[in-house]
Length: 290
Image 1 (spheres, one colour):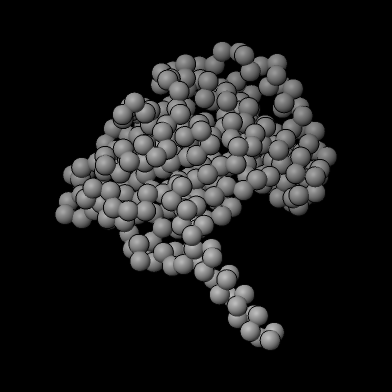
Image 2 (cartoon, one colour):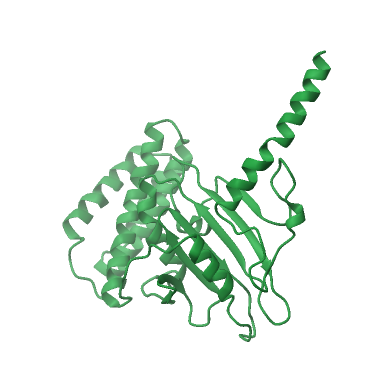
């Protein structure tokens, strides 16, 4: 009797999730061919389990803005990914759609997406172009290959490889995803004034990140070592910008932070974060020159 019940439970757990899984992924990805672009391996979408080799789901993933140190420790982001096969001289774009959770971290989404199109490590000028397609503003490059936008708290990223610069843009795919996830990028002028504002926002975000990490320590949701490492990492970025645009040497401060980190001196690190925040309050409105 017990064995029969377990077998019944297995079949329930295996088959019931298939509908909800399909509905969830289709909320974010287009699970069919788009014009000449063929959905990659749709046969791999097996009932009751994540697909293998075709559309993919990554839980606890911030997607493309993870590289910008997007803070996600206090919430769960989910990334959905799929490729559409081109061939015959047309590209095979990969689409990545990340659902963010609507927390206060999401106020930086547009800023973090734009960082993908800025020169590293200085990030002092916008290297892409702002383009409008069907009334939607997106970030891209002059020659395409990479397209990025936000749709409220959703981030859409479309990329393809074209080393010879001969393939046409996958406009059918881009347009289809803009229809599914319309861009909410506001009108903006990508000029020097915008570059200055982006740099100042990045400096403020780095201090905000320090606060966010220490709050997780206070809530006992993160280990001391991780909090100190991540906080110092962002504070070092702040110091680099402050040196470049405000003329204050960073080496001594960075050495001091490194010493605090090596001795696990959280009190010293937190005190420096407070010092930098106070300095920023007094100086953030001052003019800087690029």
